[in-house]
Amino acid sequence: MRTRFAPSPTGSLHVGGLRTALFSYLLAKKHGGTFILRIEDTDQAREVQGASEHFVRMLTWAGMPPDEGVMLDEAGTLIEKGEHGPYFQSARLTKYHAAVETLLKNGHAYHCFCTAERLDAMRQRQQAEKRAPMYDRLCTHLPKDEVQKKIEAGEKYVIRLKVPDENIVFSDEIYGKLSFKAHTIDDQVLLKSDGFPTYHLAHVVDDHDMRIDCVIRGEEWLPSLPKHLILWKCFGWDVPKYAHVPLILNSDRSKLSKRQGDVSVEAYVEKGYLPETLVNFLALLGWNPGTEQEVFSLPDLVNAFSLDRVQKSGAIFDLQKLSWLQGQWMRKIPLDAFVARIRPSVEEHYPESKDDPNFIKKAALIQERVTFFAEAPEMLLYFYREPSVDMEIVASKKQKIEKSDVPKIVEFLKKTLEQIPDNAWSTEAVQAALEAQIPDSGFKKGQILWPLRAILTGREYSPGAYEVTGLLGKEISLKRLKANR
Ligand code: GLU
Image (tube, rainbow, N blue to C red):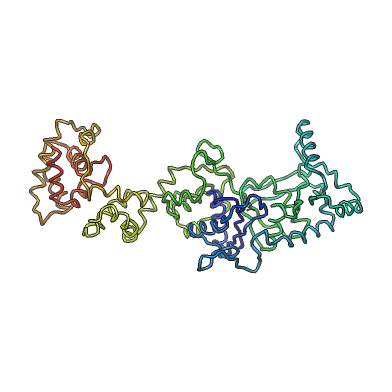
């Protein structure tokens, strides 16, 4: 199974592009096949320097570097590898020209000398008559010698596909059976006047040359599919499978756009999303595993993926789901790897954390709640700095704690915790002492533990009271309680 991702180097990689790449990668890997990266750089005016390298880097970040085509070598230089190159379309012009010659010779294509002005006027007329804008085939009637004369006179021309008068029926791997009426198919430009091919011609030639088994691409190409099918037939080549993946939508069902959030993969990398998160999230945009499972690693996806579980309707980009998945993947990181990732930034904020024998335990506590590595210093603040405590948080209405109760609660906490011998202080000892005494305190468990946690951390949300108290140690815990009576 050979599949490809074929982006145009016109900017940074879009999340929709990464999802298309992912589906192609998954299909190839599911069959032990080859995932190819081809760069479609035939629109030189729109080309952005460095975009190709950026694509490879983003694919590599996501864990799916190409097996063939454009890739990075060990030194990080952009190279091409494979027997079906070149893999940059701009280096394949002779191949497109040869393909066009074949079509011209067999009467499947023709020269068109119509000027931009004529085409504009034609389109306006068609629009006024409420007809679909289509080339009116004026140049199909030019005799051969006239074509030759015009070429020799240096007139600009394009090559157009001569669409045959037959309806087309095809089965898309995702959209199912499709049919197109011949009279609705435009005589597509195949070769532009600058000698560059259009996407339509180039991808057919390349997907044939590169032995692609299944073309996976965005739904926006579906209307062009009939022209592509005609081209395959005119060349006499076997048609690969085509799978058009659904659009990605904002929560209001509009097409995913920059205005409603970030659309570049890089933006999510910079925010601190893990590759596992983004890959997992994008897989579920349009693909339904058919089970309740939501957390999938890349190998899990390779196992479970199939195109027949990809839906046709647009898939909603749900940022809450993304954030939830990020949490799931942060929790899965082995503790030592998590500690290694957060250590430098935490030490920068709190140099004393370097010699803290309980650092790993503290890290483990925040790993349960963290969304991004960058949050670690802030989440650990109260372990290394005095938090400021707001009485509005300590006397929580939700916990049914009156401000007037706070001194009594603090008194109880001090008395109970002071009884724990210094050398026996631990999370377990704190828990045992409090659980033994709370029933006689006149307060409910929550009325005791909430203020304890709020006073020690200054926060409404933090790890549990026993853990925080245990790890803060006796001296600091009692000091903070005394300061907040
Ligand atoms: N260069 C095209 C694009 O970026 C590729 C479409 C395809 O995968 O065939 O949309």
